[in-house]
Picture 1 (spheres, rainbow, N blue to C red):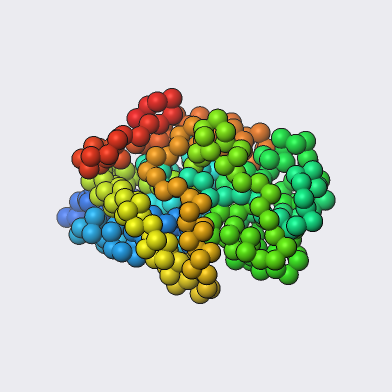
Picture 2 (tube, one colour):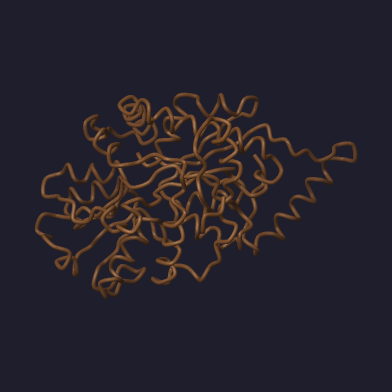
Length: 353
């Protein structure tokens, strides 16, 4: 695993550490650019099925060849971004909001988006007595984590309706960031009134009594025919620069995993369920998992326009300073793999590859 790029305040520390390590290595040991291990981060969410399936089936392992694959799981994107900053992981599946926030915090030095993974699969589930959107003020709505993609979506949704919300849970609508499994239990106990969630947690809450879907997020993206990025694949900037072959191997596995999901949707849903249960220690109903799977589109296309829109939303609600996304997408390695495997290329911002 390579030491990852970090926010500017941490660069001096990383540089000092690197110099000390070089001194300890001795004169005879020169630097190497070939990594022998790669650590991939992902979440126990259906929207991360390319990793769930790719890891479970050994697809990434086979694609990486002699490079050892290691994995680490997270509840939400901001934690995974911090792990990228500290060099604990080399690549991760992330939501667009944490990806943009991490890009901003590191001034474009930490990582790049190299592929999409999933679109759609999110929404707002509420209690039955909240019959319309106008009934939402005065209620408590959970999100997976402050600054995460669903958190930004809910806060933007509130802002568009003129509802004041803050990061302390106050305002016309109380927004409560918490872990997804905790949210499922909190809804059952009556401690919250709803939640903006990704799959399968969205379907888990919907399966409870006294719950219905108030907002299907696809309906909020009419300009893109309901397509918006839910999950992206990002890679540490140093790994991308110094080990492009390793990144292409990872992308080859990523493309193959998504192809396998498309060709075997029922088996992929079951594998995802089993993998999530192993990671969380909980149980998922097979039929519920299949329903959740049908709500997500798995694709290597990063839906670049929605990435830009997420950044604008986060800026508008005060969770992100104005940011230039030039360079955040590095899609040439992906498009090389797509060309080699007979797939159509994907486009970046403003049509750039």
